[in-house]
Length: 157
Length: 188
Image 1 (tube, rainbow over the protein chains, first blue to last red):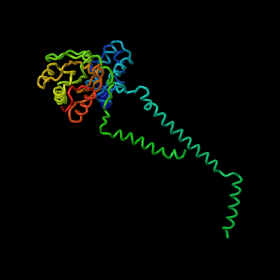
Image 2: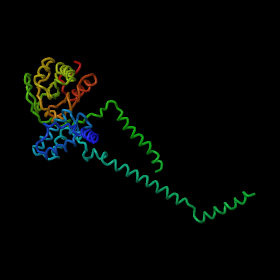
Image 3: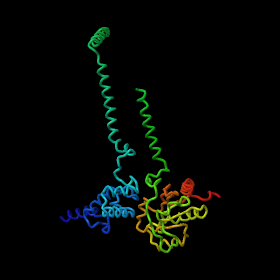
Image 4: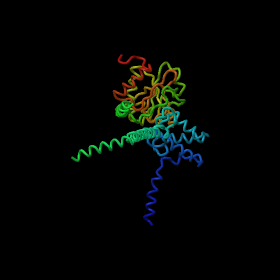
């Protein structure tokens, strides 16, 4: 029982490790929840594989505060994200927008397998068709049988 | 048609090889963040002067209708590479008449004043950005960062990191020359 409790506590501890400091949080739980949601979408520009919600970098903290400030001022989620995006570019978004520069990024994962299937399908279909074309007609079968029979007889000698 | 298919593996190899070559290029910094500010008007900001430093503050209004392109350097006394960069920037100002403005980023005014009186002050204007908000407007990710802003207030160039060492100085000099920010020709 004590062991189980210990395990639960130990496994739960990392969850408490949080970059968002108490003084940053908004009093309104609704706004705070939205701020957390937005923070998870935004990349920290210093430690680039972390979102600003979990980053301890100074700039990340500034951006968290900024997100909360904009929310308190009445911005919608999209407006807040656009505000940050205007200053740091699409790079800060973990989910890149769908636009001409990113068509390859978004479409390639679907287009490439599709192309592979189409090409593979065509090749298989062709191979199969060739196989059926190459099958002998009744007339040819008879001819072959005759030739074989004739040679077979000679081989017996 | 069949002959065309025979070239496909070669074409794939060439395209992939090209990507690999691009990826292996040691000049390329994969963590570099493309700046959205280039060719855009400089952001709105208005910073007070640093108390104890005898140059005025810096705002967006100071960047338009300047006699020539200006350089904006984001620095702080707590930033170690800034100290090395300070010498380079000072040389640019003294020898080539560079117009240099500073943004003192997240710094204690007292520390900044001491730092500048120890090392000398090459900045014509310094804005004190204690909250780091102006830094966000400029889209900086750390200090130092340096921008070249054209006469009409358009951001022409951004350099991330200290302008220290032959390569960095050469790169920055080229950018300055292209922007026409140097009064006197280099080497004179």
